[in-house]
Image (cartoon, rainbow, N blue to C red):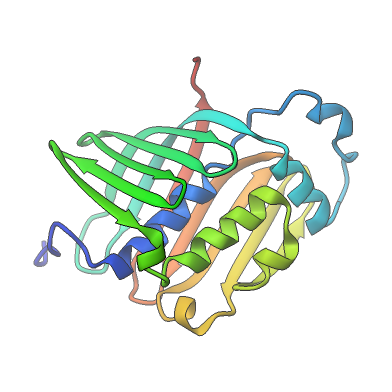
Length: 211
């Protein structure tokens, strides 16, 4: 195994992780009344997909995640639970291999591991804002907000769709090559982030967790 990176990465490296966690807040649990308003099956459009995704105000699901780091010979695997409450609270609870919590609440990011906590005010780290705005825009069905930082390509159908997000902002493009999100109608199934330094991660969304 090659030399490992420091235990606490620079804040700049948190941006892809934050984006990944927030993207996965787009959960498969349907909002009350959403099914009746959902567009019919078919190829659909980006606007129809955003409408479906925006109709999820709450979710609680499992996840599995695989990180491929350029400095390691083997990928890192983890699993846990994701909780989301609209409009801007997400909790990512990693249970295996070691407990770790990542909580975003009203612009404050809190990371907890091994009895230690680190708190960041996102206004102090503008390099992270494009990621958060892209996810906020997705949740809100705000296409203009989404396209402010990313070129968006929609493919497939509403039953089996793929979103390719390519950074349009130079600052974002320095860190991330692309984000690929796939799903079925209003349910996200997987999220892949490829970084320009060779690192990559794939998160797979599992079933709902009973309250």
